[in-house]
Length: 225
Ligand code: ATP
Ligand code: ZN
Image 1 (cartoon, helix red, strand yellow):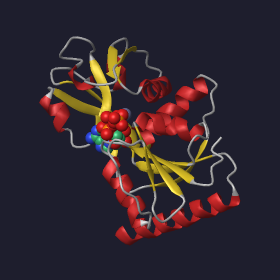
Image 2 (cartoon, helix red, strand yellow):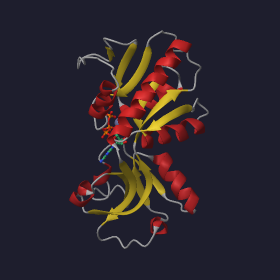
Image 3 (cartoon, helix red, strand yellow):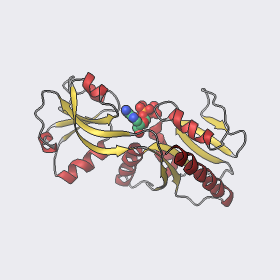
Image 4 (spheres, helix red, strand yellow):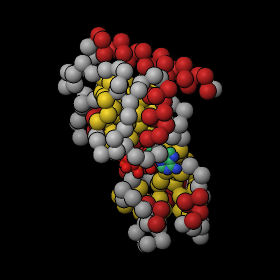
């Protein structure tokens, strides 16, 4: 699909992964300036274009071969992969490596007054989440049935609003849960940011550039360890 000679890399436009994604590329020697109004930023020194989009769009853009590389949370990648497999849409890509930022966990949490023993305490109850596929996979493995409450945002307020009995949401410090009268009961998925590549065969020059960038990323990440 992406037949341009320039390498296309999708990164999150604004959010928790944006700064670190740009910092990583810059520390690999990719020079660029961001114009907040523009979707695309052209590198000044390498044949690379950066596409700045919503993080949720990144896995699909890579799996459809619209862009060559993407920097994304493993949580969003895996959620999209399960969804696409279910819909029989292209769902493959190559995970080049895990990165050292964007760490978080997808956890089950319930109101403070909820008497929780294990995940089976949620049997037959309603769980609010933005990650229905990761939640379903976890609960299916445990043989627990539950009801979905799909929310793209404000998941943590769902129990207090009477929309759900518990939630399955991303946690990093737990402060948001606490502020909403919830406590974390189990981690269902641990995530970091990662860099992915389209499974389509690349032009040799582009593939060589990908390898050069990857080896620089390896160097940058290792230097920090
Ligand atoms: P967008 O507008 O691009 O859709 P978003 O609101 O969906 O952004 P962010 O909150 O910026 O997404 O989170 C992006 C990613 O950052 C998450 O999918 C996850 O991989 C990672 N992350 C790290 N820590 C956290 C956290 N505490 N809460 C949420 N996401 C986190
Ligand atoms: Zn998002």
